[in-house]
Image 1 (cartoon, rainbow, N blue to C red):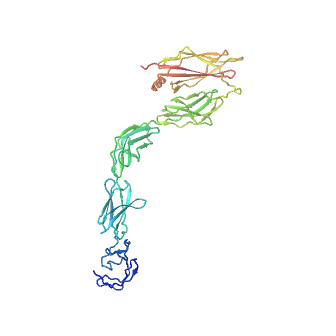
Image 2: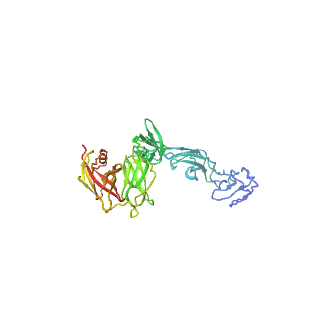
Image 3: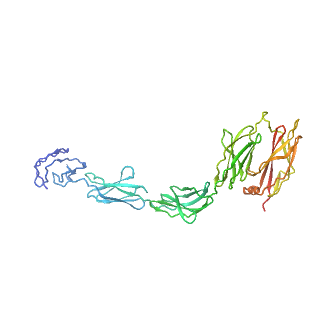
Length: 483
């Protein structure tokens, strides 16, 4: 369309507003204000002539100069949808806006939008191959052309699905104290979590999930057989289950000792006595500390013992004791603590232990080769100092224990309290004994890889003047080969 040269409006390159008074024949009506200009950059929300690049208000549809149809900003795309594709892809579709490209933006469930791609004019689909795996994401799009951009479309949400995970490998089950089972495995290809199933009988049941290669199943019945299997799980699907593995939970922890009593019996010894209520203990553990120190284990005794004498202590010192039992299933609770003091040293004490006392073992070799149930004939010769006055007295106690060569106590006999013999005033006393090698002691020693046990014996006597004397000796018993 050719316009009249009598156009009354001024063409102002700086974009000022002018009024059109007369229209050329055939031109669109121009009874309202217009915005004109020759700026090279499009102005959003304004219409532009594709030929002369003049800008007009949105009410104009044709150029005042050459009658060309004005370009307009695009409308918002409609019908946006997001569909999860294979692996980590998300496929977006919408209704294309004519003569406009499409900008695609994405955000996580929280956070700001970011541009992830641009589709060419006429395109109505886009595949996002960078979506975060296994996470919900939100999309929006808008159309753009040389004039500007449209409003945004409505939002569409999708989940980028990862590939299905591989089967976990090398499943191992181990029994732990406290009726627990520890599981571990090697994580196979593909992200995800793990479903743990347990069977105690015929049917499996899910007992937990975890995101790494470890899991501990607690609260189980003691000494019970279980089977486990696991599989990997993620939004892309589930792996097959592993082969099942079997394991038996450990025995229940033993009961705690009761009625612990402690008594100082010399300047260097304290005797402990207790009631054994456990039926399944494997060790009896004795711990000791001084008032300002920390507890430390001083003895590991065999099950069934109810007495223990602690040696090599300092005279006149307070000690604190506690005990607990143990087995493969764990530890019992501790007993109540017992505070006890050894007999003091020095002139203020009625009781004192002379240094020049001796004990000689006669009529037996230092090593005796024995079978279970055999005895060792032995004679003990006790010697002690004499002085003027009545030095007679009583042998008050004797006790013995069987110990492995590495110091682990296998059995301790109950203390014998009474009058095994009189201590004459001449400073010498003999005592004949026939200690026997118990069969269970020999068995326990062999189970620990030893072919010998040591018999430790101690005697305690007291003279009329109050002097306390303690003698100790050790006999090694070699075990005859088992038949």
